[in-house]
Length: 141
Image (cartoon, rainbow, N blue to C red):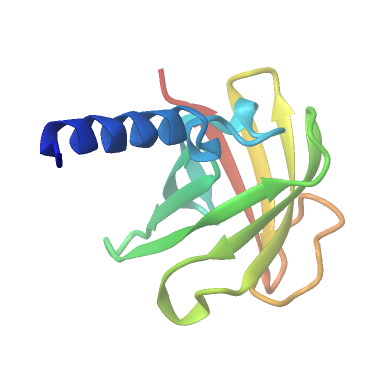
């Protein structure tokens, strides 16, 4: 005999077991210090960043009020107070392309990132040059 409620319960149980064990429900290794909202500047422009699990959103507003947005997934190659960060853009004309960067934390409340343009080499220091942007953030409380 077919019992719709029994099938529904079985499917819901499988769904819950799957979601509880789902890797998206946990922080990606090495990214815990990044998690949360940050506010600061880049090239003299206001910037805000949000890191959640393995996704990042960076908004930058210029003096004219124009906004630039970067959305992507990120990974940290050397977890710790400083190391390498890779951001793969997920929207716009650069979707699927990688930006290489470096990062450094100063305590738990300040974060510096030097991020190269798409398909450029990884920066070697925190110096803004053509094709490389330095972002300085403070954690939003």
